[in-house]
Image (cartoon, rainbow, N blue to C red; front, side, top):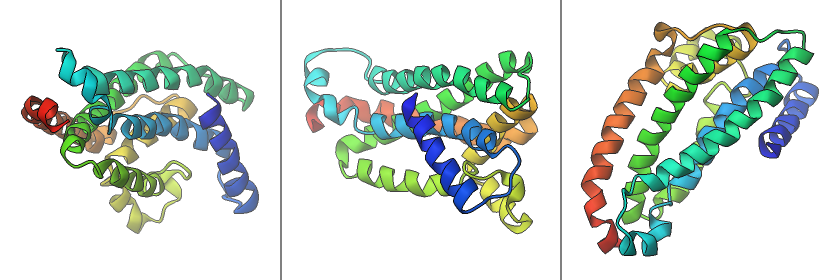
Length: 222
């Protein structure tokens, strides 16, 4: 839990105290999107090389290969879920009150992000077996993605002419849904989440198909 908390503290100081972003309850705005982002970012970074880094295991033991990226994503999901009580403490300390919508919203959004992650990491981890430099490009891409996703800023402060551009990013609607749930106790609607849901379905289908096709050659490639 220290990683997201320390990163949140640094970003809060830099953006609220130094740059002075004028957003009410900025610490909640920041943390409510930062925690699920850390789950996404860490999972993709660690799962991208997980097949290529376990060559000996893959060549010696017969088991479903998708277990390796899934274990990485699930492990980071547990870390994310363990941060939620900390976030709840911040919410209560700021004068807000979690409602029963959390009981519904957290599982729904967790499932959406889990399926999205599995589609992404199945695709990347299988391609990385044959193109080992991909994991380094993924790290660069994630750094860029961090700034074009409303994590350190809410979407509503972005000028109107750029909001539609940011909404093309499927993580935008997902992070805003997490933020609405934690701060406003608002359940995500399919209309608001549709870019993320569409990309999730596409990523899951493409990731599964590519992984299944390339899986047969993993042992030879490694």
